[in-house]
Amino acid sequence: MAEPCSIKAQAELLRQRNYKTLTKKEKVILHLAELCFMDDKFLSEVFRDDIEGVSYLLRVILGREDLTVLSAGTQVEYPNTRGRSVRLDIRAEDETGKLYDIEIQKATAGAGPQRARYYSAVIDRDMLDAGEKFDQLADSYVIFVTETDVMAGGMPLYHVDRRVEELNCRPFGDGSHIVYVNGAYRDPTHPIGRLMHDFHCTDAGEMYSDILANRMKNFKESEGGSKIMSTAWEQFLNEEREEGRAEGRAEGRVEGRAEGHAEGRTESLTEVARAMLGEGIFTYENIARLTKLPLDVIEQLAKESAEAR
Image (cartoon, rainbow, N blue to C red; front, side, top):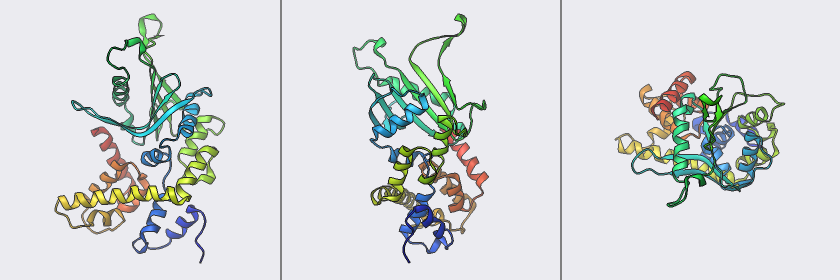
C-alpha cells in the first residue's frame, strides 16, 4: 500500500500500531509529527542561518516592518570560564548593530526575571571590544516566548525597560530591552495571536503564516529536513545509552524506556523524563507517552528543572 504523503497522515496510522513493533524510520516519523516551534531544538534547527525566517519572527514580535536582520545563528554558545555559560536559542543582529536573543521557555520558572537579567548581561559582556567607548554599546533585546501567560495580564506582549522612578518613570535609555511573548495568546485578529497559534501547530497546513508553514513543511516532509531531525533523535538516544553504560546500567535500557517500555521502577523512568526535558526537543505529552508517566508528573519535573537552573 502506498505511503501517505503527509507526515500527519502517516503518524495517525502509526499510532494505531504497537509502538514496540515500529521500525526506526517509523518512530522518527512519529516523533517528527509531534514537533512544533515551541520545541526549542526544533526551532533552532529550522531557523539555523535563516535570515529571512528570523527577520519575520522579529518583525512580528517587535511590530517593526523596517527591521533588517544581517546575521542569524541558533544554539549560540556564550562560554564563561569563571561563571555560568549560556546557549541562546536564536541570536540575530540587525543593520544598526542591535542584538536580539529569542528564547523558547515552556516552564514558567525558566522565564524568571533573574534569568532575563543574566542573559541580557551576558550579551552585553561581549558587545564592546577593548578600547571602545561605553556609548558605542548597541541596544539588545532578550525575547522570551513562553508557553503560558507568565505575567498573568492577558496581554500579547510585555515590554520590560528600566525607568527612573523619581522622574515620573522617565525611560532610563540604557538600550537594554526584555520582551515576554504570551504563548497562550490566541486572538486571530492580532499578529501575536496568529504567531502563537502557528508556534503551537504540528501541521504546516494549519498555520496562518506561509513563511512558517513552508519551513515546517521543509523539515517534516523533505528528505533533508527529516534526516536532520532524525540525526538529532539518534544523538539523544546515543547520549542516553552512553550515560547508562557509565552508570552500570544495561546497554539500551534508557532507549527502551524512552520508547515506552513500562518495566522498571518509576525512579528510573523519572530519570529518563528529566533527560528528555533537558534535550528540549520533546513535548510534555510526548515524554508522558514514551515514559508512561502522568502528564502532571512531567510538568512538575519541568518546573523543578527550571528552578534548578
